[in-house]
Image 1 (cartoon, rainbow, N blue to C red):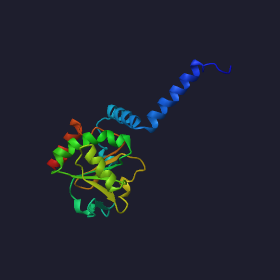
Image 2: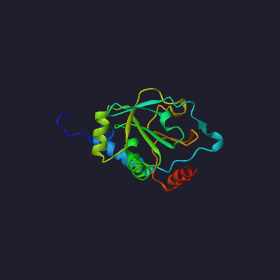
Image 3: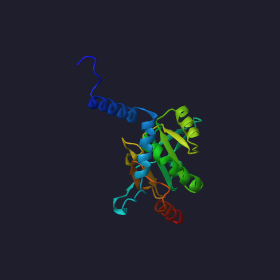
Image 4: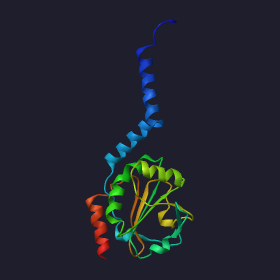
Length: 189
């Protein structure tokens, strides 16, 4: 067997392993994961009124890239859209364009908080690279229990009364007609 070329099945196995490695550990893999997540993103559903939870507190502290600290308390009585995300998260990256479109149309009507654990330098470089203008924050204190998640993206919509009316873990199409209708209904209240 010495000196012979490898069997066809051995070559196929090597090619398969290389492709899997590319998909798992390279920018190509991230691109593919982002595109797949965009394909499966649907409009988020509103939580049934009987299952909605009211925020237990508004003491959550956040800071922006300039070091300015804000409290959720400052937004009490307003509609608040909160998205937990990271630059390394393909599902987060997948939903960002739909969030950007929503933000462009509603930024003067509702509060948007995009919360990351990434350093601001990395998050801001990502925002510039992706042509996003979303306001980025980091948590200083823990969020209310109703918004704690070990998975990202995690997105919450809080109404004017402090009820969590949308709690979506995973990718969603935030720029859908049905979600915009929900926001418009809330804004009429």
